[in-house]
Length: 473
Picture 1: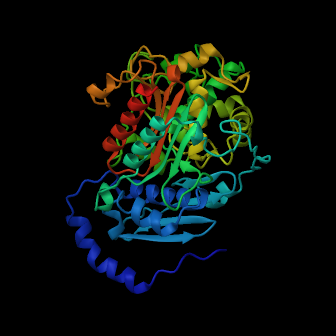
Picture 2 (picture 1 turned 180 degrees about the vertical axis):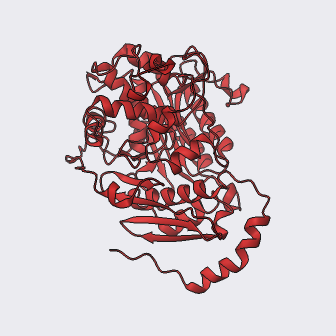
């Protein structure tokens, strides 16, 4: 077995000596401050970004993880096993809250919560999809380089200006930084701008967080197109077979309006943190939430609902992670030319459809291009027009949301900026500044990824770029 990176015992003792008072006396209420969520978040973040994405361990630990889980690092203990797993625990007396995130090639990282064991998860059968040779054709069909030569001088200047703005990070405190990683623009189906932070490149997959919800919606759209599910039919979870939940439809689940109670906040012990960091079967746990409103009437944003969708899609395809993995790889990723993309699974093998998609930025952009093209790709119809229209249309419960895809009008965007954006604009959005913004009427897709502690500024910069690009001839 690999051994963890060494940590001098003196440093651990010093941390312990100064930590307990800081921990118990701290009045700071950070985003994730309870121990199970904090250790779970840290273990999964460190594992995914280093072992699936290939990022530098020290950078991920100190720049991306430590600022997020304060004040946990005063009292944590991290064991990092390269190529194998990450263990995170606190040494607060009398509290046991160790979380391990294990790495498996082809699956990425999986968190091991109470009720699961590393041995059992590693024993799950799985065979990674074999990748073909990448095409040298131009994006989006192949892996050809950015086609910046297509840009007029005015457009090139505009793209450079917004690229500089996206990558400008003047904050001096780690917990206030933007940490931009990628900024890409596709115009008229061509990749015309591609820029990465220093130390990053095209071939590194990046965690999309809640952009994964939109990916889950596209997979459901494929299954609807293939006749494997019907939007107006009940979802059909076996645990919903009796009672009022039996009538919840796919359309309602994908619109975030199944009527289930949910608390999405990430500060402390919410439903979202309890599910993500303490539950082995995330979809089944989310499905047990109480029915509090008639299905289809109330919009409730939830990371749990896409996990329910993934669980049921897995069941419909035979009940194995292999079957669902092969389905989205072969029906979606392979036609689009997406390479090394995955949705990391929970401890039962069900992909975490609400949060754990890990794709290269250029591949998240491909998903946006598929939406811009109405579900058509390279002369084929991957997602039926009526299904794609459902995914981007306003739901009965919210004008701002479709089928796991955000849409205009959007109250989170400043009103003056919103007025400059086309009515058909839609987007994928993820935790800490992940955005794939799509304007079908302009055949425009803009992507920004990073690890942002100032997400409002990151959002504003992206949509300012989109507004300017829409107005650029």
